[in-house]
Image 1 (cartoon, one colour):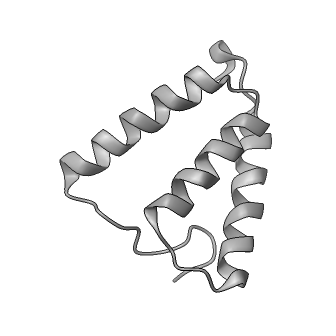
Image 2 (image 1 turned 135 degrees about the horizontal axis):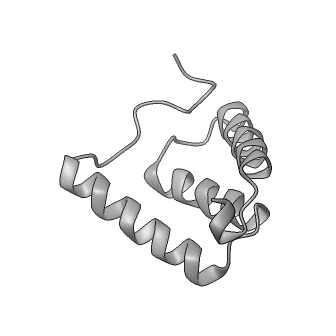
Length: 79
């Protein structure tokens, strides 16, 4: 992360905030919401748009390879 100029603490804090917001909102827990959270958190932590796009493409490919189509929980907030 440091090699790419990213601040892990800021990314994690932003993720927690956005996942709490999702949890409290009652919106559906979808893959789109998780990707939005990842995008915003990475941006807050200093990632460029091209790095964010590359990471999200790789993440989605990895999830697809594992057969994951939807999240089953909201990190930090779902049991």
